[in-house]
Amino acid sequence: MTGRPDQSTAGARSGAQAGAIADAAAHLLAGGLVAFPTETVYGLGADATNGRAVAAIYEAKSRPAFNPLIAHVPSLDQAAALVDLPDALARLGEAVWPGPLTVVAPVRLPTPIAEIARAGLPTLAVRCPDHEVASSLLAAVGRPLVAPSANRSGHVSATTADHVRSDFEGVDHIRVLDGGPTVRGLESTIVGMGDGCVMILRPGALTVEDIADVTGARPIVSLREPGDTSAPNAPGQLESHYAPRAKLVLIDNEDTAPDNAARLTFAGRPRGNGPEVTLSASGDPVEAAANLFGALRRIDDLAPSVIAAPVLPESGLGVAINDRLRRAAAPRI
Image 1 (cartoon, one colour):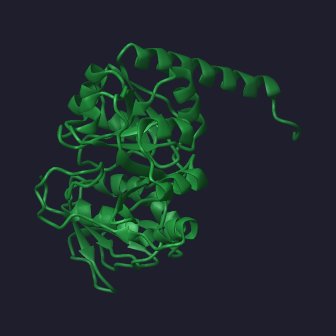
Image 2 (image 1 turned 90 degrees about the vertical axis):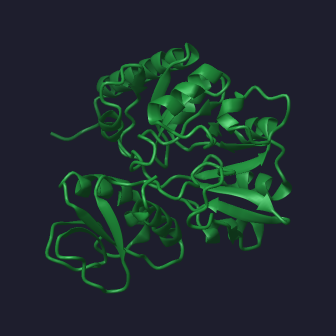
């Protein structure tokens, strides 16, 4: 039988979600941790103004204390109240937010943000997430939330509530808001300013071309050199990150994967004899980005000794996907 959706059922679901968000907000205001969905990945949230709560994120993730966090706020105006936004970054924020953009800019002092969240830096990373659950949670809390990806530090980012539960099984003080799978599947693009130009500090769901369309100039991609052991000046810059348990190797062009390898494939590459998980059979980078972290987790669950992954064309979202795969393949720290 067909017809209109059962409004009482839809209302019950809406009421249950509202109740869950209210409970999560109370937990955050009491100093607890809550994992919640954004359009990119799930974040592990804490009240950004509570130093003890922020420290609990570092402890739960085993995240190095020198690695700063992103403060999530509901609007450009609230971001501008926390940081001194240069004109180019303000234009980007106006065009993209809410959306997958993080800006790093000088912090406005005095600041309500706990110093530990900035890792002692004179800058702060801020963004406005584009997800109904994240927006509702921010409104209910009424304070900025720091929220790195909701996974153990260095492990594959979480794009479903089950990924979060898997990484933090048995950690009772972390609550999880289930908003279904994330849409983008890659973290936000992090930008800052250098020599009067917009600099991409971490490639992400917002592409070089997207940024150039807003600013009128192509941004400079400024990534840390391999082997750089200095403290990062923005989140998401550690060389070894997003890593599965198995060793990951990158296969360029049409090379065949090692015989003992499980394979991530993109438009049929790489080839081999072992099990495989496809990022996008059609070679669609948007589909590949959305599937990347889930595919890494699924293939890792097969317990291979080696995972082979293809290098995508270095344009559009391929830049960010390759960045994540290179870091997943980097020597473990």
